[in-house]
Image (cartoon, rainbow, N blue to C red; front, side, top):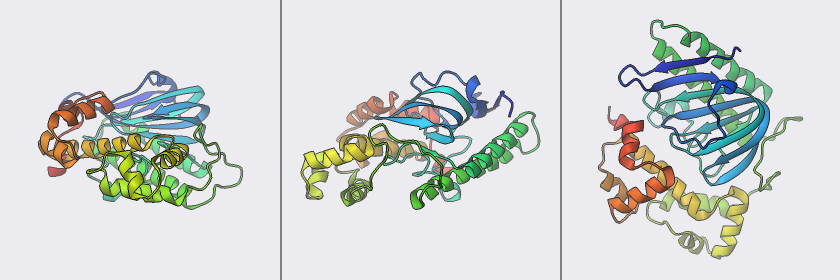
Length: 301
């Protein structure tokens, strides 16, 4: 594939709607990224280090990296080749179309897994073929261009989601090397208590923000649970709870017209100001500005 940039602009606000660009033409990724659109990085060659949220990982070729709007990440890669796809939630909202592509919680917004996964050769070929079709469609305006690009993006996301889901259900094929966290080059099976922790966070993150409460609930000492969590997830329990709250806050800010103080209350904050400080500390943007930059009440349209 040729090394060009292909961009679709939203005619209503002149902001980026969709872009496909070769990795060597993208602005430096080793600078901290916090952008108001989704980013998919298909790494076909090279290796390097990824910093995302609270963790650091090793990444290598034949990997797909996936980041939600305002999810912080920094990628330093040597001899990197591949493609970057950016799309704004106004172009395609994974929350609103979850039943169609099922990538929410798999590719994006999964606090329990790294924001990337390895691809086998067939999966890599399929994704590159879709990008080639995107290129052709973006080269000139044509009838129903937006609709066709959305369809291609859906194919890309479904294919990628299937490949990541397959990794969780099957052993890797012989000869394929998967990227791994620096803390656990070959991860042992996760203790059962971690599944119980995941279930507890999903059930109680709106009400319980204290790591100690989860340890008490699981009948394990806070120190022991913290050690296991840090080893397997490369982050603390408090960081995981915070990430989960931010994900839900973003979803509510984007999909609904709820008042910010209502969202704050539903997520367990005493007042809007406390929630706003928390959200800005984690995302470097206020809840109101997030709405303006990413979208507003898209689930109600």
